[in-house]
Length: 213
Image (cartoon, rainbow, N blue to C red; front, side, top):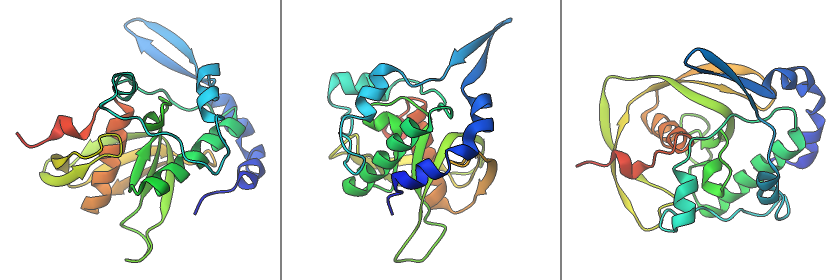
């Protein structure tokens, strides 16, 4: 299920035009527009390339103070102009969630505060095999009015579980690895839950923030 580096290199050319639009993003701050450089930093690259592409990253642990700081940060969008680094990160992120036994993972959980998530799509495939899909720069644009308490847990908060309040459906927008921007209505409750949990990570929110009181 792990995508090979060769696939990453193959689609590199298709990113060229899209990359020019995504290397920087504009942030409006009051009356000023700030252009943010989205290039991967040296410190990010040190983490991304600290082991082979088929190895898992160390998962941030909320009970470790330094890790908790990372998990509480707001993430930034990805840099499409450096696909070799981006796909090295996403490939290893996928290995990490598979080896960790999770159903979803976000880049901040491995120390990279970027808007990247993997989600196992329980609304697709068969009972025995649900596909994994990668989403870049995902945003939830609408939540259902109806909320439901669902069992929840997190690879970054080992040994802790509970029930968190979740919308029963969500609308999401995201970029695919080929540069396509899409919007989607996620109507299956469990899959909608996973999207909410992982996108929360990108905003520094953990499932313990949504526990039943």
